[in-house]
Length: 480
Image (cartoon, rainbow, N blue to C red; front, side):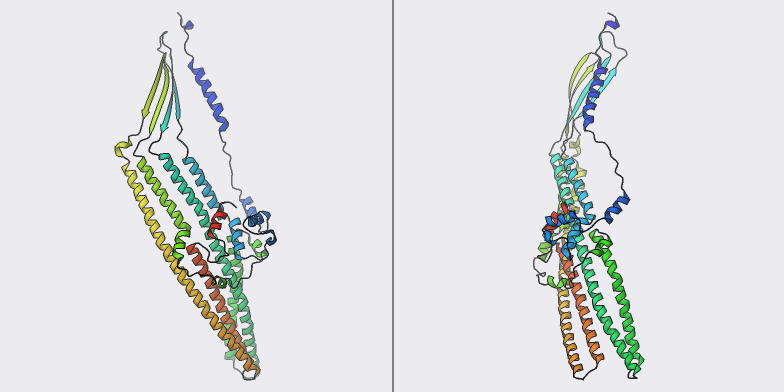
């Protein structure tokens, strides 16, 4: 029989056909890379076009308890500004993107390890007429994870995703803190400008009185010079407060995620006594420490980090038990058909993964020590904030008492003037002292507002029942 008459298995056309079929099926599900360059001009325009009166923000407010009759907001109070910051400020978008990435990692961790397929083709140039010159093989490797490793990876990814979710709320609380702090400073600055303007008028009257007395030869230039210097000093301070007005508005605009021009158009509510209403609540509660340990987001995040460290240790312990790979295969070798079944595994059972287990154990110990230190710092922070709030309340009460005494003195001086027992200069000085006492109340009130905000952030829960709660903030920050 001649070579031309001998029929060999034609392997290459079959292999090529199978390969093309496989590629044609799997190519349907491939994703293509799409470039997404950052358009800085468009982003700048997007920031400039943010408006607090747009329909999306109004719908957001309605979804969170506002009524249509309340919109658009005419007088922006603190809670309104906090909702505005939660909607517009881009810092929360970063935390949301990180959370979505962690959620994607959680789904990735749940994926099963896929089998691998391998093939080989060979041709011999020494084959006789009785032996086929072709050889080809096909093998499949099926991995089998042992010791529950996949579920441990899922557990670790779940804790990482929960920590990322809590960081959204943590970013929101930080944003709430910045908005509250800036808003209180803005209100205090506005109140100081108002009171210093009154002081300026009284000091100008004093200068005029001294000037008239000098013209009449009833006074010396020393009193007039002293009064003018005090007026000049006040004018400088007042100008500084007025310049700071725009700076505080710019800071507030940054916190809200809006442009300065947009915030300048918003009518901010006049809440000069914002701290007074907070004293109606009971900030000196005995359970502040327990509230902080339950509410603090950094503590809850630290617990999730510790759980991740625990999962890592469990995974390294599980790796003492080697994974298995089952490898069934088929080969056609120069006319012979060969079936095979292989079994392979890493010999981790010899070392029992001791070094990795020791490292994971130490990492868990680090997380435990960090959590202990965090708890200690939180308790100390609550105690300090509570003490400062107590001092602020006492200071405000003292300043109010002094102001009442000064009001009584002003009325006394006014009665004496009407009776002809004093002159206009003494009454003007009494009114000046009353305004200065009122300024001290405003400063104490501002300090109390700052102390209330510090304590709220120390326990990460509002003291006022009408304020936005931490549960609401956590729910608000996941989706807008």
